Length: 182
Image 1 (cartoon, rainbow, N blue to C red):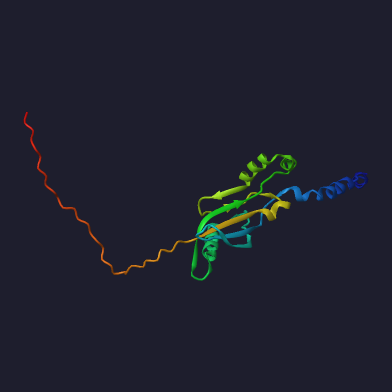
Image 2: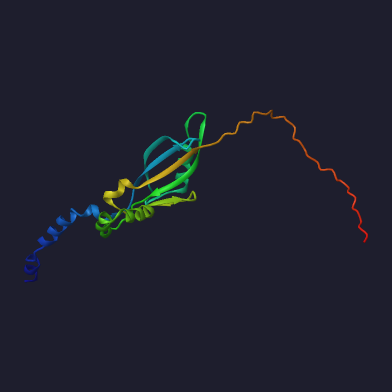
């Protein structure tokens, strides 16, 4: 008799719920597995000379490790022989909106968008592990790490290497003080 009761339970509502929920899967936060690595090269006149882009894999905890970051910087410093670029800035772009924030984000004024842009765009001040927070899956391909390089100023010494250094010496002067008698 107990077996008859178990077989009579209708589980079709669970299947219909799962089917309707599948259409909303792209609006749930998921771990970030890859990001765009965008490299900007700026010359001495502060103009962008070249832009490169590649897909960077992240570790299982959604980070770019310090070692990976150092290797990227070393690898991407030189784009043309003879011109070396130095790291100028690191900027992380990570859209971490929650699903319930999307309607307000779409409807808000430009001032609110500016505040959110500041929330998403973070300047990294140190070379350390860079973590990316979970992101709604439709925004995954917007997450990026901008590595900005600036052309290094190479000071060419036109003077001879063997030029002697000049030493300035100050001679002591003795001055006479007048004594005033009143």
